[in-house]
Length: 279
Image (cartoon, rainbow, N blue to C red; front, side, top):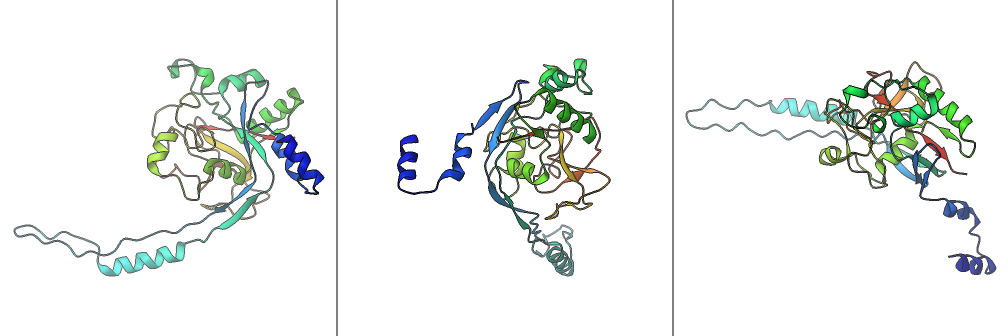
């Protein structure tokens, strides 16, 4: 690769903008045991919503049985009109710079190393396995910021922050254009359960990132816009911040990358993962 690069430079090709990205490792582990996956620039369609309505089918009448009740044809026409009015074309979001995102949600063990305490509800006798490997939860957005601020002071080699909503969704989708299928959500997400599990208990997404669906809701940097979908430009202020990804208490409705929720949530099912800047 180096020989090829030298030859191309001698021939006059300008390839320098890609050198720094080429030099970045695909995965990095910091001194606190946090693993990060490199996310490269790209684009995605956000906020697309195309609801569908079934077709009217006349009721089946069998001899000796009561006719099956179905909605009248007029109701289907009204539903189709409502679906058309609710549809959204979405908008393109381009991630222009590479970044590292946590391979896992921040664990209780990692929180303990940085903060010296453990605020999580699901620890000790409330779990059956290693408490430290469960995601830290029962934290506010401000708590997450405090953790990041202290981590940045302790680790002089890197710069950390919460992902913004688009960074989170881009990493969660891992190149997929459509929302996650329910069958895949069951394989990849800790959902419809009673407690959290150790991080990485289910399958990763296509980019090797775990628990983007389920386990705990995840704080992101942006303010909530009081809508189901994000806006092209996130609000600069608000009462609450955005939560993404659902939790172990979630179901099919919550197991989605496309919509967002707002804090503070239930507390015991809210955690976070962090982003590390590419240097």
